[in-house]
Each structure stands twice: as C-alpha cells, then as structure tokens.
Length: 340
Ligand code: SF4
Image (cartoon, rainbow, N blue to C red; front, side):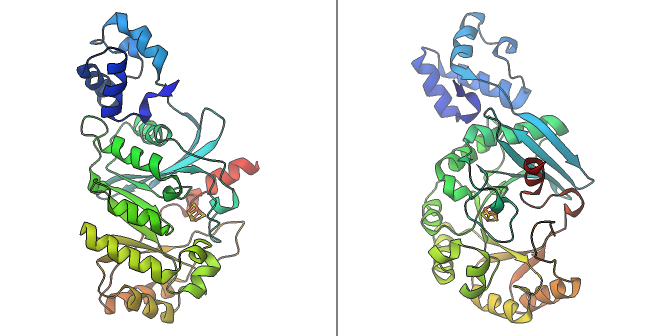
C-alpha cells in the first residue's frame, strides 16, 4: 500500500479521482495531515464515513518509529527505523532565526568521502519521498513546533536519488501542506554535475549547496572519490552555469581538516577558484570521530582561513559548532547504533 506522505497534493487529487472522489477531499485530507496533524482517516471528521474504508485500503498513514533521540541545547539528533528495519537519522538545529532540520536521503551512502562516517556504511537503498517527509513530521511532532528550514545534507547523496528528492522538496513546499518556503529548502550535493544541470531547470526556487571541501583536484581526489568522475574545474563550470540560469546564490560547504585542506595556500587557491562567483562559503570545523584519523583544525587555522577568504572579497562564515558533544556529525549516530 502506498504511503500518503509520498503524494503531492496534485498526485493525491489524481489518485482520489481514480477512486471516484472529488478534488476537495484531497485538500481536506492534506489539511488534516499537515495542519491539524491527525493521521487516522477515521478521525478526520469532515470526511464521509462511507469513504474511510476505501481510503484505508489505498493509503498508508503510518509514521516512522523513533528508535533513539539525543538532545542538547542546540541540537537534537534522531534515529528513525523504517518499515523494513533500516535506520536513518535526522538532525535538528536551533538557530537565532528558527529551527532547521537536516534530513537523510539514502540508507548509507556510496560516495565514500574519506572524512565521513556515513561513507563507511555502504548504501543499502534510496529513501522514498514519503520517508523523508516523515522525518520532518516526526520531528515536528516531537518538538511540537514548526521547523523553518530544511537541508538535505544528512546521510546519502541526494542527487544519487534525484527523483525522490525532488518529489520530497515539492511536497514539503506545498502551501496547503507543510508550507516550507522554497528559499528555506536547500539540497546539498558532493558534485554530481549532470544533476546540477538538471536541478538548474527545476521550476522550484529552492537552494543549492555544494560540498567542495578542497581548492584543487589533488586534495579533492584524496578526500572525495566523486572528484575523479567530476573534476573540480568542470564542477565549477557547472556551478557558474547554474548561477547564470537561476540567478541564485550557491552555498559552498568547506569542511576544515587539520593539515589536509586548511592551509593559507588552500585558502588563497579557494579564493581564486571562486572569484567573481555569486557564492557564499560556509566553513565547517570538523567533528572528530573515533573511527577516522582526521583532526579538527586549530582555532587559529580556522580564523586565518576565514580572514584570507574575507580579505579577497569572498562571502564567508564559520558554521556554529552544533553537535560535538552528541555525535551530531553526519552518520555518527547511525554508525554507533549499527555497531552495537
Ligand atoms: S559526505 Fe555525504 S556524500 Fe560523502 S560519503 Fe558522507 S553522506 Fe555520502
């Protein structure tokens, strides 16, 4: 049976019409699910009793199972169990401007970035849009508040699961549903160029972030396997084309790894690479893990890197550190659970 959470309002309207039901029923159901947070058709009081069995026969409204949650003042980290027993995680972050959630898009990941815990857990399968939507719903149910922005930057390469991720973005953007504004939805890729090009043609005004993490092929090849297929100069060209086509600013994610990509030369090279582009660089201090040999850059290296970019006219910020104390680096909660 199909999960109702994987259907856009249009899809639901179409499916109901095949069952002989009028379009307004789809709007009523959407309102119950996403505004009133009532998930059982039986409890949707303006839905005719006679059609409830038909709805129950065709649409599944089950949420996910919350297996574990870690909480700290700035972050909650969730581990959810899917119907097939797979485990996925999502992270909530509290900012001055609201609450953001980072969702996973796959169970495991095949991209094999060397600094990533998730890369150690090979991809088992892609997530369905309905499962990603329920990551958001579960968190909102838990905190009893609306979240203001969503980043698809948890476990998985979203552009390796392109169609379901696009569907997910459309569903959470639906004004009669979760109504998360397009400007508050960001998809982050390790650099799958054909999909960056496809994304530039999507009608939604959602954002793009690129996990760059290196200023040249030599370093990037060592830490990100994807760079062998899509080298940095081609990636930069595709980002320029994206900006040209969409007129939207792109976020460049740059994880600082001690002695690997955090030197002054790297910062100068990065500034040259990005010169003149409508981008914004987000420097991310590394979260040390027990399994990987990388070390966090010193405060001085982080500050110097920031200053070097800033002086060369690059828009740059240092990401607030959220989860060092609660395993909030990508993949760590799930890795710990799976190994137990
Ligand atoms: S950083 Fe992202 S793309 Fe790279 S291995 Fe980890 S989850 Fe996959």
